[in-house]
Length: 411
Image 1: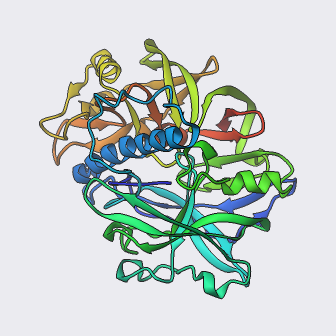
Image 2: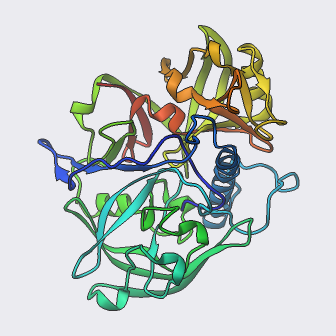
Image 3: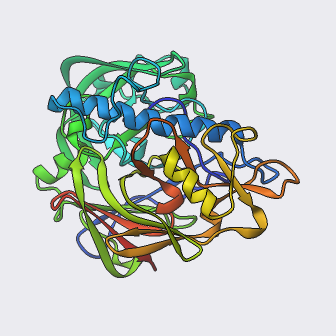
């Protein structure tokens, strides 16, 4: 599930051309397109989108914690205590206004129909706009289970609510889902009968969303698409990998694409199967260690790096940054544009640099000497959500079979 409020990132949308193709080895490639809106035409930060992304990132993870407790019967170890949790009631789940998403093609049903979906490692469910969806689905390709010979009604509805009062709701079905020639049968998915206005085609170019985290945070409490592919023997290896970059972005299923990385992988074990949650060893700035021993969630569906207030404040103090509550909003910080810090994140004992272009989101306002940093803070969050500000700098493998995440240098 990828839900509530809004995700974002800089620049104009771009499309990686070409249909999904099989690699020369055993895996399968899916070209990815990017939608983005963090930067205004004049190069300054889109503050409205940035604030929405901050709220989105927190809300999506908190929703996953709720689903984890619902499915497992115990609170997630990283979940905030409910007596101090400050958020709107209900499941905060889907994107609302501005978007950052990495999307590609899948096909569903018999006969198969093609859809585009946002691939999100911070959630675990597949949903599409259904045939009963109203005007907000105009321009999207609708999924009609009545037109599929392999569709089965699960007999359950789903309803995902947001803090702004909008919802995504519909019915659950099972059907055949194919990604680049890999087929999952009897896969649970949602056919939405209602999309929030944020899913209008002008705002959300993909038709739907495919979650790639673990079943324990599934709204449906059902096997994820990739888990189904693994259990049905459709892939040679229980591994998928992402390159999220300005050019040649790709999701690779059934292994890793050796043409996109160099050197060896550094692997870190998942500490709790729900999200892709791993230990973050260190955050460094300008060659100095600033923070150590943090819990983190690796999430392709979050644009920025989101951390707890105390540690994020400590990080910006170390680089001469300033709290930008008055100019950008709560949780945001600026630093002198002329002094972009050298930042790295250490996983598995290996430091991984974050490029200046990734960390620097742009001027806080036209003509300002201050720029907004790609690490932001959220109240009531005790963990870090490590999103695309970091992931654009590495090749990332999600190893389902060994419950670990691997990082390698981009080639």
